[in-house]
Length: 105
View 1 (cartoon, rainbow, N blue to C red):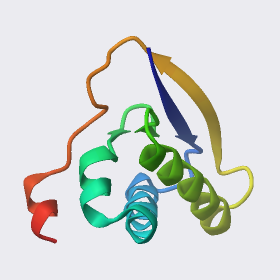
View 2 (cartoon, helix red, strand yellow; view 1 turned 180 degrees about the vertical axis):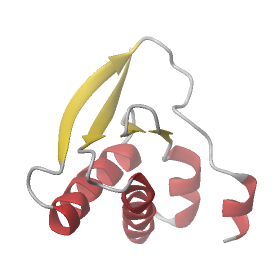
View 3 (cartoon, helix red, strand yellow; view 1 turned 30 degrees about the vertical axis):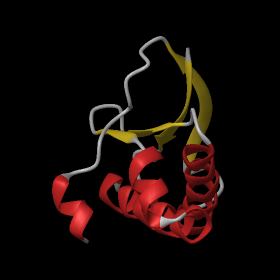
View 4 (cartoon, rainbow, N blue to C red; view 1 turned 60 degrees about the horizontal axis):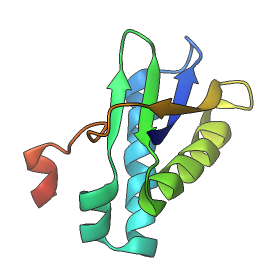
């Protein structure tokens, strides 16, 4: 059973801006773990209907991305801008994969 981190955003938080903060968090983790490791291990899903971001936390990279994202969201949108929880998933597939064009960015 995998552990993931669920960020449910308040309705006044623009989901696109929160996703940009997620990408910034991933960029920050590149400095700690390296770009290749982030590309291999950082997986997430943006849920537009649920106004949420789910990060796969089964490895160190995912846990670092979640920690940094929490700090960025708090700084940018305020203390009460999101709810955070740890969730367990029975599905051992990655939460998502990166888009091919991100590989060359």
